[in-house]
Length: 185
Length: 185
DNA sequence: CGGGAAACTTGTCACTGGCAAGATTGGCAC
DNA sequence: GTGCCAATCTTGCCAGTGACAAGTTTCCCG
Image (tube, rainbow over all chains, first blue to last red; front, side, top):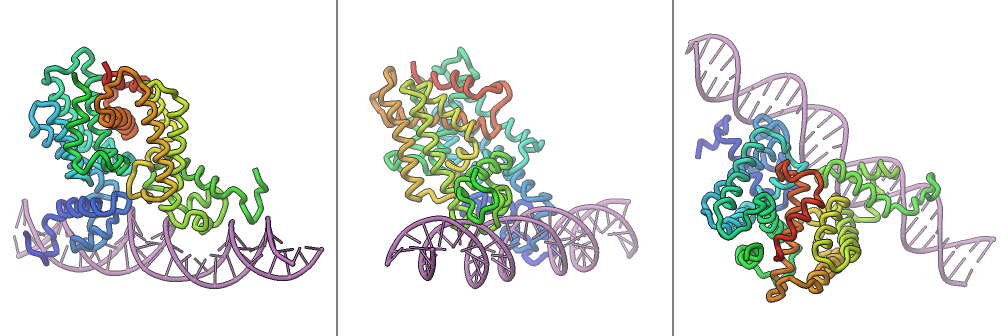
């Protein structure tokens, strides 16, 4: 921790991103307020402007960070397709704030270079897992990749949105393990 | 059209919902402004309050309307599972504003009785299609239902979010037809 | 050690959501 | 018909927000 009273915060950009993730986790992305973030971190209401330009700029940075966290999670899950899918679910649940922003167009600048690069890294990680996996229909790799991504993404999105019936249970990763295998026989 | 100058609009609730769908289609749910809706419809800035209470109330009504539109679309698609899935995609693309609100928790009151009822109607419609379909693994009906819903929902969500690579093409329904069958052999 | 740039603050403006109080109108009891 | 009540809509207001402008403090490099 840097000195708490310094005029220069020293790590404000990182602190604001962390505060944003926390605030979104509490009340969702729509309720996010730059002034609230500034208060949480202990700086003036205009400080965030200098680092992110505007609100969309901050969410753009958060989305980029999220895509890199996702790529890392997928790489950590290894080459097993089921485990990679579970990793995707785990990422979305653990980093819910990032995940919600990443796939909410209109909240941030989708064509920002940093976001584009980070998104490319995560899709490459996903693609690598599927390419290596035996037992998957390789006749139409693109359709297979798309289907896999879709099941996993759809499942966790429904989970997070609260649209799923109670019978599914309370453990998203466990539920995902019963759903994902239906894609491969 | 009712008289345009009447003190009583006559159909304000419906007009506001339509304006909301239009506005969200233009700029997304986050940018929605009650005052802007009032201006579009030609009433004062406080008129919406009387019909919906607050902003969440309006979005709650929009979500309920969306779930009913979805149930209708699924019923119209018949009992073929592939066509029902394509119908789901068609609904999301055509009624994008409704769809985005329906699955965005935090924007509206998920436990509202009208929403709950409408959501139950649409899940029932989805369940009916899957139950009737031959060639689907019926050993674990719940997992099958969940997987089907997940692929379709995930695909169209990714599509709408702009996360999919350009190779997927420009016709979401056609792309869905190549993805959905991978669930059944 | 001096000067310029980066980091942060204070001040301000237009806009938003929500509330309160008043004006207008439709419709029902009688 | 007529009177009255409730629903509908308006005007006025307040606190909070995002964005911008201008000023202040601090860092760092030459």
